[in-house]
Image (tube, one colour):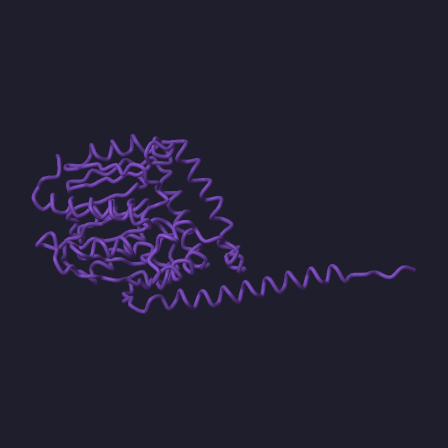
Amino acid sequence: MTGRDDTLPRLVSGMAGAALAGGLYAQARRRRRVAAGTGSESFVEARSGNLLAYDLRRAPEPVDPADPVVLLLPDIGGTAHHWTVVRRMLARHHSVLSFDRAGYGRSRFRTTAPFSLDAAVADLVDLLEQVCPGRPVVPLGHRLGGTLALRLLDRPAVRTAGLVLLDPRYPGELASSRLLASLASQHGFSLAYMAPSARFGFSSLLLDPEWSTELPADVRRLCLDQFRDVSTWQASRREWQAAHTELSRPDALPTTDVPLCLITSYSGSAEGIGYAALHDDLLERAGRGVRVALEHLSNAAMPHARDAAERVCGTVTRFVASARKGDVPS
């Protein structure tokens, strides 16, 4: 009778086990670095129980005597540190508030209530009431952050002095365009696998994204850790599920009586064409609004690339100054 030789299966099993153990060890170390952050963050606890990490920088020479706070609202998967270049440029002439939504960076998702975009906005309102109560605010929202910025208009506790939307997502967009619905589904399909893979330590295998080379050296390592951290992918999946559900409803775009600056960067792409009618509709509903097209820039460059940051920050500074003077077109 011939004996079995199971050396190869054992070897393969051992190598797989070692790789998994190494991935989990790397994940644990990464999680500790993300939890430590830069050490400069402050914290508030929202009424939901979520803990929000934030950074408020006051302008030494504000462009507007009222010094409205420019509030940075990242897209799904984005953290406050991804906006470092933008924040530092804006801070020359504006007070700037950056923060991480619950689940990102040092912020903690503690609530047991079902997650929704309105719940994220409620956390944001609590942050503003505790950190800069009564001060005028100019939200700068990118993609999903733009959706949250629009929802702040319904919150009377927030003194919205103007609104800057950078390639925003829109209420009802997935019901209005098959193309946008298809692109969103593809993104969701990818996110469905990222959190489980990261949980088992496989996010260490992810290549550094191209945008990481644009980041300042002092935050690049932290941003890459956040990019590979399991909590980032869990938060992204949670937000995408809520956004996909809520943006699939045939909701109407809001009407706003505050000055609006719409910044677009799609430059004729298929996705840009899908959003064109929504851009036009939003501007028609704005009492005072202006659109600025950033040519030859991809949405992927936002907000990391220095060229993109310079153009966005210049637009924001001019918009805040014009809104103070009442020069925004009506």
